[in-house]
Length: 397
Image (cartoon, rainbow, N blue to C red; front, side, top):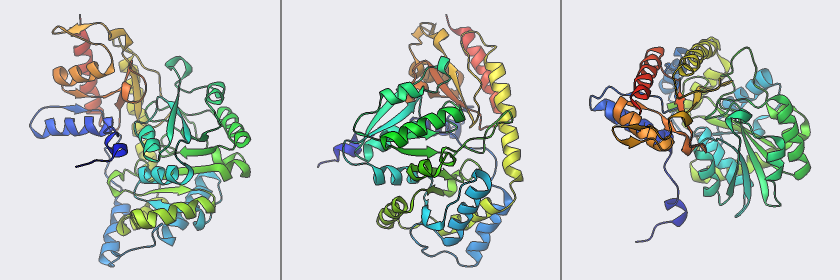
């Protein structure tokens, strides 16, 4: 019996693995506090759920066009015009089964075997694996905490070769929560135009930006930049619709056609009912979006302030998303019950075992001296988790 070497070499998602382990422990009666998954704890707003119920009652339960309904494509275009000042037509839009699916479509459309994709790091765990699945080569360009987790344009340019086909810009970033400043994005865009490199702009967290800031979309720089940019977004984070699985891309029509053709064979259309719900999300009241954003900002402020008061750990304040990268370098070399903390893996393992708190090792994102904490959970859980962190650290010798 033979197995695919390519598929067998893919590592499981560290974030989903940690989340599954935490949920399994909780289901068995263990009082676990989970900070693993990037999933808003708010319910999907009622007007969105009602749109799905209406779709079912109207028997909207059949196949739709493979790349999504015209209604949803129009709603996505309206969203881009209203919130990003970007003009797209339905022919530029492809609706997929979540933003992950969208990203796989994009990479499949722009890469040939051996092509390279630059990925600023720390980065989301799935990016390198997605590139490999598309027969590409991930090239991580790492930035330190002192650099604000954002690699300089000089670092990015130094990584460009004649095989570079794309760069992934996740803005705001998972796992760091940092936003690329406008001037940096303009410099990166100029480099990409000069070198003929696609910009894959993952803006799934664009609505979750704090301190009065507004996220800057790289595609707005110029028509030339827009033509080489593929914007990836979805409804999961903004509208607390993670399980509905609706993502979308905006790109030039030629790329959109390629992705649509492939999707017609790979998956056919996204869920018809979820598409109706997504229309309601994008065109309906946005009050719930701002309510969630304010709650996340409050949680971020508390977590950052509290974490920085605990000896041996620290963090910088993220600009957006709902993650904090905790620096644990002050704990490395210390022991608990005779077991030494050697890096993020051992910290996460023993923190879960001893204190029943689940966090994601930073090694999975490209930094072994950090762990990622998601504050997409209640203030009660955040307080409990940080109480346990303080107790855990106090036990280290």
